[in-house]
Image (cartoon, rainbow, N blue to C red):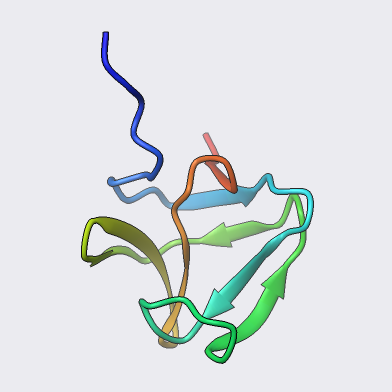
Length: 79
């Protein structure tokens, strides 16, 4: 049966934040506290432009040099 991957790997147009504390927006593929530039609250809709790879992890690129996580427990694709 296998396991379910923890990150989205395909591009989707819209995603919704499902984490109670929201998510941070970063200006680099490597996420640190120093490069966090914005915050999205729970239920925020975000338009995704592309999927970026950072070693074995994928990130969503949202434009203007900003990235967010593609973790399935933090964001959900909007159908």
